[in-house]
Image (cartoon, rainbow over all chains, first blue to last red; front, side, top):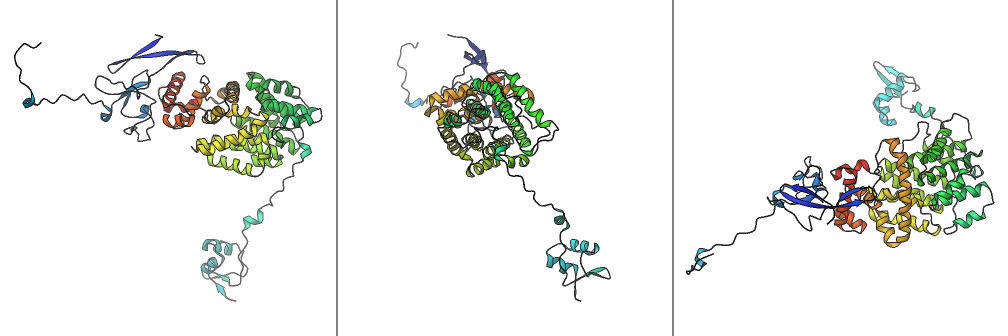
Length: 115
Length: 399
C-alpha cells in the first residue's frame, strides 16, 4: 500500500491514500466517494467531503443558497481536513431494528444447559 | 389682446408652470404683462426655444477611414480571406513588409509563437507606425507563450509609452495606438492606462476587420465587468453586420460569446458559438484563440472539442499551458490577483464552474464525466490552493 494520511473524524478513523501530483510537486489526498460508500461515526452521523453537493436539508447560517456541505450550518468540518461530519438528525443512520420479543410465541426451554 | 394664465400656457406648451414663470421673468415671451402678482401671456404667444438646444453643436462627421492608411497594420486580421486559403492569400501578397507581418500573424494565430517572434522582431523599430505596432503586439503575445516574459514586457511597454507620448500624430496613427493599447490591457485583464481615449473616438477610424476585433475586445471588457448581456449583444450585432467575413475577428467574437453564455448558464447557445468558431478556425488551423481562452470557456472545450477532435484538443491544451503560464506572469504581479498556476486545464475548468455556483452534478453532466471525478478534481484543487471550502475558489480563478 502506498502512502496514506490518517484522520480521526469524531471517532471514526479514516486512512486516506496519497498520490504525487507532478504539476503541483506535492502529495494530494485521494478521498473515497462517501456517497457511494457511506462512512458513519459511532453516533451514526455520515462523514462527507466538504465539496459534496448540498442535500435537501442543507441550510447556510446566513440564509444564502446552500451549494455544498461546506457551506451548510449542520456540517462540522474537521480542522485541517477536507472532510467532516453532517450533524442533521435526518441524515443520522438509524440504529438496526431490535428483534420483536413476543413472549407468547416463544417456545419454552426444554432442559439442557445453555452455552 | 387676449391673455392666458401661466397655468393655461403651461398646459398649452406641455411644460411646467414654473418654467413658464421663468420665461416670463426672463422676458422670453413676447407681449407678456404683469397683472398684479400674476403673469398674463398673450394667447397668440409661441413657446420659447429651449436655450440648451441652441447651444448644442452639430454631430461631428468623423473622417472616413482611409484604407491605404492601414495596409501595414495586422493585414491578416483585416482581410476577409476565404476559409482554407489563408496561407494561399499570404503567398499572393507581394514580397515585403506587409507579407512578413501577415506571416507573423498567421504563425501566431496558428499556435506557432517561435516563428511569429522571429518574423515580428525585425519590425519592432520600423519607422512605419502600422508595421511597428503590428510587430510589437504579435511579439508581446508570442513571447508570453514561450515564457520570455521580459521580452513581452518590453513590447507592451513600447506600445503604452507611444500612446502616452504627447506628440501630434495623424488620426489613424492615434487610432492604431489606442486600439493596440486597449487590446493589450483588456486581454491581459489589466487596468486601462490613464490616457486611454474612449472607444467611440478610435473605433470609427478603424477599417472593418480591425473594428470587428476591437469590438471583440470591447465585449471582452464588458465580460470582465460581468455585464454579460451587453457583451453578447455587441457580439451578435457585430457578427450580423458582416464581421463574420473576417475569419480572425470572427473566431474571437464567437469565443467571447461562449464566455458570456456560459456565465449566463445558457450552454446550448455557448455550444452553438463554439462550433461556429471551430468551423471558421479549422480549415486554416487558427487554433491559438481556443488555447488562449480555455480557462474562460467553462469546460466547453472538454465538452465539445475533446470528444469530436481529440488530437486537435491536445494541441489546444498544449497552447493553453504555454500561454496561460506567461499570461499569469504579467497579470498576477500587475494586479495582485493570484490566478492559480499549478492546476491542470481540466481541474481549472471544473474549478471555474464550481466557483460560479455550478453543482458537482451539473459540472459532471456538462463535461461528460462522473460526479465522482468532479469531486476528485475539486478536492485536488482545494488542496493545491490550500483552501478549505469551495466558496474560497473565486479569488484564484479568472473573472
